Amino acid sequence: MRIPFCEFCVKTRLFCSKCQSLLNSGQYEMHDVDVIDAILKLTDNDQKLNNMLSNVEYYKSYEVDDTYFIALKGIRRVPINVVRQIEDKLSEALNRRVKIIEYTADINELVTQVAYPARPTVATTWLPDGTNETEVRIMRRDARRLRLRPSDMARLLSAITNRNVKVKVISHDQLNTA
Figure (tube, rainbow, N blue to C red):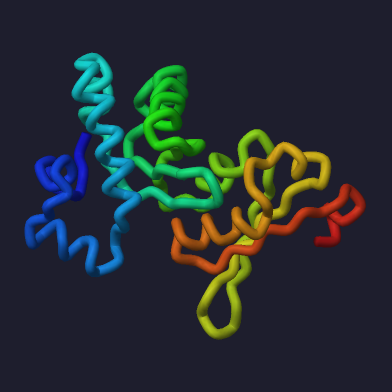
C-alpha cells in the first residue's frame, strides 16, 4: 500500500522533517497515522492481503463520532469480501467502527458509498458568484438506515470534496418539489 508517511515514522512515531511537515500543515492528523499503522500491521501479518493492497493508495481518514471513514484510492479493485474483512480487523485494532470508501472526485459516487444502504439523490446548483452547492436528498424511509446523522454526513462530504454540501431528508410528496 502506498502511504504518504515513511513506514519507519509511522511505526516509531518519531517523524522526519517530511512527515512532520505533513502533520504541521494540517493535511494529515495523528489519527491518520494511527489508521495507517493499523493497516500496516494487518498487511505485515498477511502476505496475500499485502499483495492485494499493493496498488491501493491511502488518501485520508475522517473521524465522525465513533466511526473512521477511510478514503483509499484503488480499493475498488479489491474484492468486496476482503474489504469487509479489513474493516472488521481495523475496527478491532482501532476500537471504532470503520468504513472504507473509494476516494474519487465524483461526488455522486462518494455520496452513494457514504449513504449506503440508503439511496440518495444528488443535485448540484451553480450560484451566481461562481461557487456551487451540492444538495443530497434522502427519502425519509431510507434515512432510518443511515449510519450517520444528516448533519454529520454533510460535514463528512464537505471535508472529503472541499465543496459546500447539504443533506436533506425529504418525504415522498416533497420528491418532485425539492
